[in-house]
Length: 419
Image (cartoon, rainbow, N blue to C red; front, side, top):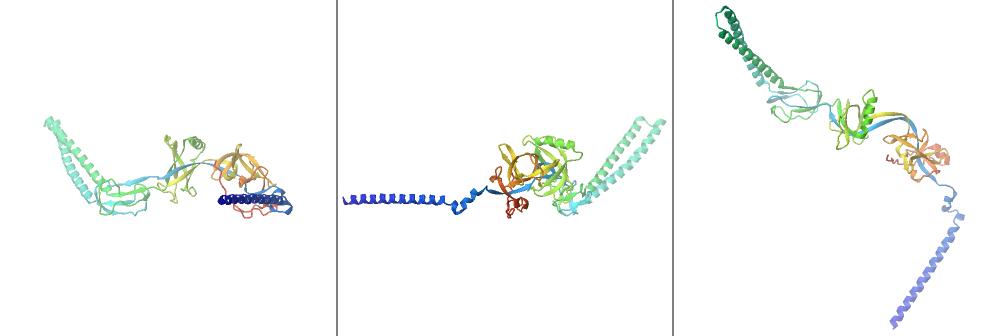
């Protein structure tokens, strides 16, 4: 019984404490509300928002007027203008190698010599056989002429004359065969001296002096690639093919092609379009194009990956803005334009061709107008702005209108807008 009374008393005390705590918190909130009502009279920071519109810091750049090239880009790889794998056309021992790996060679330059002595002996044998048969041919010719005279005189029969004629013809054919054997021996002797069929660069050596080579060997002695000039094969979508054909038809000279590095940042060479493939690849929906480059500085290499950029046209006096200035909305593309009163206004624009981070504006914008390139997410029509240059430097003309330092050395990052 005593235990029950103690439990009831504990519950009552807890309830009393909870009620007292709740009333004290309500009194504290009421006091805070009364204090906040007097905050504007005390000059706190909260009153600054009601003194005027908020000023938004933005980066701006002027719209410029310039010639805008129209490019078509594609992925490709470099190929040697000519590639030759030199093989031996005769069997024999490699006697001498006259080139160094990686050497530039001229057309007709001696590169490898195969032991010519066996073929020199074969040539002498063929020449000796030819001399022997030529002597027999001379005798057969004289006998034939003599039998012709005797036949006219009726001394010999017709069959004897035919036999002499047949012998003369057979020896004449044998002499021609001997001459062919001599020519073949001379040709084999020539094949012992392997020369460069084209001008180019020698690759790694495949054989060393003293090795035996055969005309049936699968591997060659060396590989020569012509690098100056050099070609590149690249692909474009089949939907872009009409543009290329129209540009090629209008142009009086081959279309210009630039080759860029894998990261598309370094221009390696400038060349010209030579041909468009005669069919479209149905599996990829692309067509292959071939360009040639002088490659005088040797920056292009066979099988090198490149980004090819084909110049189709040049748009004269286009209004150009950075891609970061373009915004998209329900009404289409637009930009924020900052006027002389440092107020941002929305301007609907029509976007034309693009060239990297630059876009041509077909309509809606005039040269020299200041467009916002960073900070658009905080803007709306009529917003007051504090401007600084796109590269983070001050733009004193606009910043001074607010009576504040233009830019304050702020750094702005430019985020390109996907087109």
